Amino acid sequence: MSEDAAKVVEQYVDAYNAQDFEGMEAVLSPELDFQHYNRGFSFSSAAELVATLRAFASDYLPDRKLGPSLRTNVIGDTVYREQRWGGTLAVDLPGFGNKGDVLDDRLLTVYTVRDGKITEYYDYG
Image (tube, rainbow, N blue to C red; front, side, top):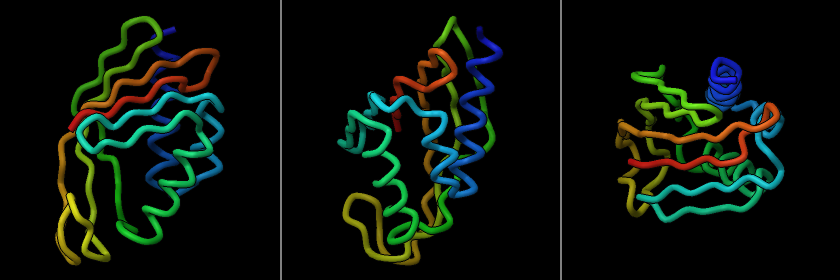
């Protein structure tokens, strides 16, 4: 299972970076539990998360990317992926920065993958 779970996560990351919102939703469980603990975001469905990511990419951070894995550990159906995340702000965004600022954050993301879908997605950082 561990290799399969990591592959699903990398499919998601590839879709995220390509702004392939349908591809992202395809690997997320419709009943997704999403939390970004340090930013105060939470969603209880893939549709909510993808709609927010779509708006964020078009309005705030069009060039945002998840970097290559700095470290990935897999235990059963849980994938721990450490990576950089960032891009250039298109507007002033409270809590993130001002227009033109380049964001470069280090994140740890914990994914749970069941039956080929990401069911839990937790960001720290």
